[in-house]
Image (cartoon, rainbow, N blue to C red; front, side, top):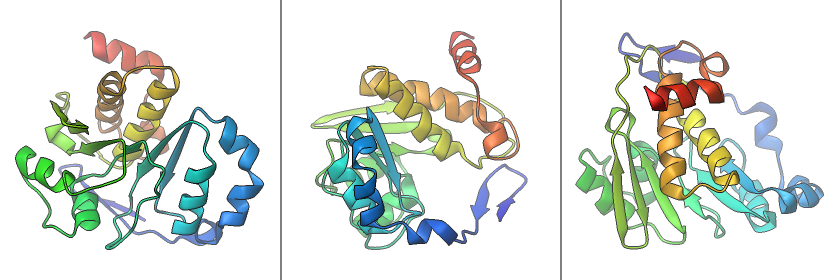
Length: 204
């Protein structure tokens, strides 16, 4: 169930169902597929054991989105790009939910293990941290109708761009544009933009 307020922000009630039954054995059964994948995207709607197994078996880039936020969750060891939002970052680090970009950077600095961290900040864009480098990418200006699936859209678009060989910065900008477009339409899957729409948006 998804509830959306007048400003387009959402709250989601999750019933895990089949997702909660995914096991490490299921992932091992798909080892050939995971090994061939250019990008594997993981998130927390399945048990940790499945995420950890999939990350170990993945042959390409591993993107981990720790959503929905779970206090004390431990990301898999083999993560190339960690993509939390503010709330998820706070859950991972045990810190208050950060407000400013500097607070986000300070909290993200507590994370260990991932090759890079991209913190999604809604209307404030994203913060990309890779090694000692820090880059704030502002959000695209849109009039949001419904933010449902914006995070999923970002991760999907990021994965596509990385699979196509774009740099992390290029992929993050592409994903920001796709996610911004998704907020201008109601719903989850129906809000996801096509490639030509993202390209036209970036040119406008």
